[in-house]
Length: 430
Image (cartoon, rainbow, N blue to C red; front, side):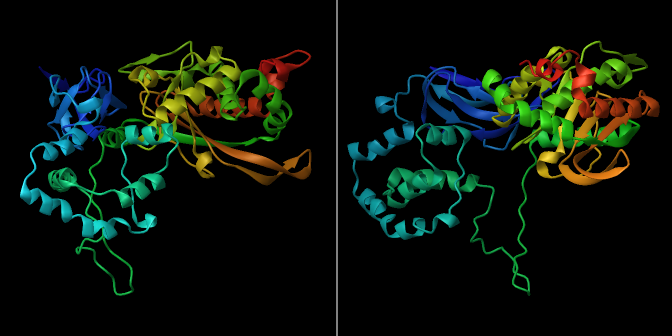
């Protein structure tokens, strides 16, 4: 029985995706529910799983753009692999059943070529699929051990046949390509052309549309991080012991922003046609850098979350984003976004609004700087913050006042967020 593997729909209004990569080899045996491929849409990376066990026949090359619902592979459920092993290993046993004389000659040819594989490990760059990497990590193995195995592996006829079948599908030329140009001063002038992923293309389109379709403006301020850093130093051990997670800066910023949005609801609003939509909740998007591009998972009703709940949720979403496991629902419908360029060393930037939202706050690195405190010059850890906003819906008064409010709460979180004998303890849920 033949089962067709079709591209699932990543969401409404998405008609085309890019086949990011195959996680199995053509002709191999796959198990039911095993992940066999990854596809990139303009919003997220999704995986395709096998509906039934059997031998897979790949019909579409990696990197191709395919329509949603199209057939990219077929699974022959009657195809069995010996002892449940991949079809490639089963194919390697076939020559033993019907040996031919020419085969002996072919098997001997790869032996002299072995020294070419035993080049220094620094010259070998493995291109492993996500599934292969997870399999190595699950068995506590690294790339070097895999390379050492390949150095001593005796390649047979089936391996050469697989090489002849797959070599023309490689898009990146080998490093020994004769087309590499050398300049007169000894440096190379080679180049590489690589197709943009669907996610990157959509991101580029959205960024340009924001610049063209909004009246974007940015206002700046600075935050003295001394109070928060003292809180972290004093309570970090108790916080981690009780909640099982480290106390970071992002939760303080998220909490301060949700409080400030209640004072300035215009910053949390959006334009739709000739109307303005005001939200009585704060769904905060947290920008996360991943190998496939920028992802913005959303914290739902962040105004109702505690510091500990915010930290736990951010860690969970960031991990899922980097692993490519985010669902579309987890990235939909944010009302405000926070991005942290400080983790990469950025001192100051003008973040771009994430449409259809009307504002985004940019965090930056913390640097000790001299500031005036009560008429005296003191050294304090300072962070520059930036608020980019759509001037069509947010006036300068609201934007500046909102950022000042966030600054005040961060510089005096205990007084502004809670009251009582131990406001910080209450804030941290201790």
